[in-house]
Amino acid sequence: MLKNITLGQYYPVDSAVHRLDPRVKILLLIAFVVAVFLVADLTGFVLIAAYLVLAARLSRLPAGVLLRSLRPLRFILIFTFVLNLFFTGGTTPLVNLGFATLTKEGLINAIRYSMRLVFLVLGSSLLTLTTQPVALTDGLERLLSPLKVIRFPAHEMAMMMTIALRFIPTLLEEADKIMKAQSARGADFEEGRLLQRVRAMVPLLVPLFVSAFRRAGDLAMAMEARCYHGGEGRTRLHVLKVQKNDWTAILVTALLIALVVLEGAFLSRYVI
Image (cartoon, rainbow, N blue to C red):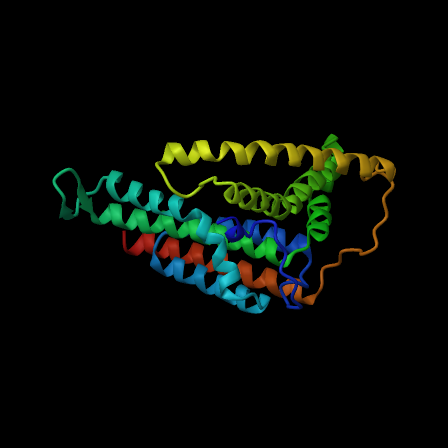
């Protein structure tokens, strides 16, 4: 199960998406999230899916690597679908189950919110899989740098977020080792009721937290030994510059948002 979590992992491939400016990719993800929440019907979801498939093909990521990010969220997806299916009121009944009535509006909402969640997870995974943590730090810092006028710690915030992403695979690997060691000693993490499985996770969480705090202390000591003092006076080996491919990606994303907005406006004016 732990191996299915792809957040924070980088997939090294030479592709057009990998070579994009990290600042542009972060802004494109924000625009993609806005477009996902603007979608109102099936046509908009088809546009979003086509954009996501195009980005995945250009990134040269295997489909299994990208779709693997959905596996840990299976319970949340099912819960979201069922919650909207049974608890959304409507005037067009489809099936009467006795204890609840499934309506057309409930089914539409269940599909809509589930697809939004799927697209958000895939879009976020596409960013982390195609962007190195160091590049992500530089992009975040450059985007937040205008806030330095109001004394916002842009460099420290970017560094903190990137370190958190960087250590997700490390902590997952550590948790996997602890689980295998405890399973060899008779621990069972898969069988039993939900409460029993939660209790079985306690012996896993305690050494995992101890290891995480120890790694954090070692990292802080190493940064202090190298005279790290934040972003003040730092120079950069790679200077970020927006290239032709970045402008192409921006135009394609802007076209997607325009189509989604126009399609939603047409739907609300002539159909609803």
